[in-house]
Length: 270
Image 1 (cartoon, rainbow, N blue to C red):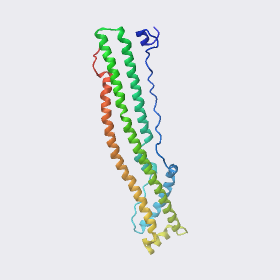
Image 2: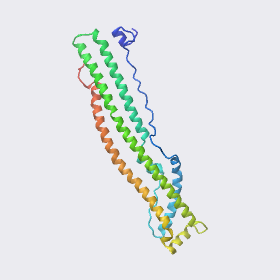
Image 3: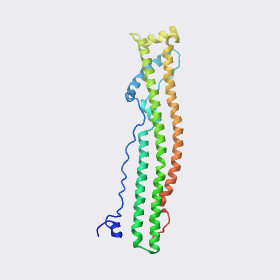
Image 4: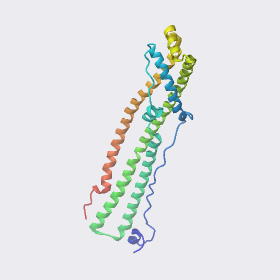
């Protein structure tokens, strides 16, 4: 018995065939803001600068200054990944909700077409029950698609906030690098020669901290930037939790509708 189901039911070849559900993997979201082109090269350079600065901090602390050392770990591990999230992946979720909405719209159209095709060739209570069920599926599917699509603006909001945060992090890290390089240059100029760090410590013991005020100021600024970045992590965690709760409420509604679409509604069993 050839032909599609609708061809068999209606006798009209191809006229009411169902539309295909093309639900492909969504593209990865892109950048929507300008980023610093040189940021990707910072990580390795910053690690080297950090190690040199920590040597200088050791020398200053031996003289009694009591500065904190810069933290270990790569820039990506410490700051960028925990703070910003993957905003391109978040935007991909927004794209996916639109595609899912469109697919459910197609499903609803197909269900409606099916009810139109069946109606003139079937009567009685069984037909009425079937048509009620099919049209109910169409309405629920369309509503579910619209409901899921409501998450897209929220995903875009989270992604935009994430990318703006990433740019702020990049700017702070750029300053971190500039300050760090300056401290390294000053430290290396002080420790040049055979005596090295020992001579630097001796100079501090003789002249006091007035001789290294500029170095101390830069180190304190570097520490402030690091503190600010770590502080931002807590702020972002709280903000993301708020958005997660909004998404959870939406997903709870979606789950209720899906249960009906999957057969949790009326219609009974045959």
